[in-house]
Length: 92
Image (tube, rainbow, N blue to C red; front, side, top):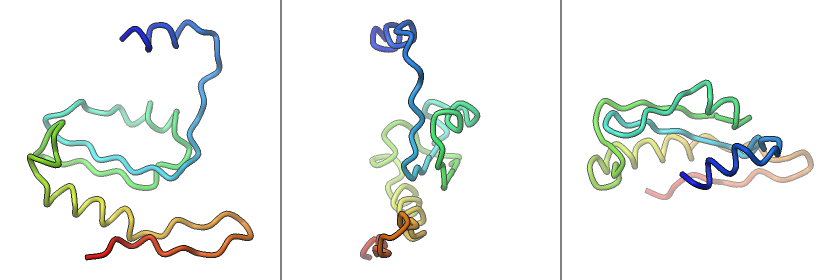
């Protein structure tokens, strides 16, 4: 809490993430507010909402989480201009 309080009053401009982002929202965890996530992240390329699971989704619904991670990483991340494509598919 203290970090957020101090950061809010620092006067610094917020930094927008430009990295490739995937978000998984689980029913029994903090409900991410999409408009705020989109404000702070320029490249949300994958958004999933699940009716089960919570903060410890890896323990509670591991198959759901793994499936969502595979879906995110199966979609190739386009390379920056002049860079070759990289295979980011998860091994099964």
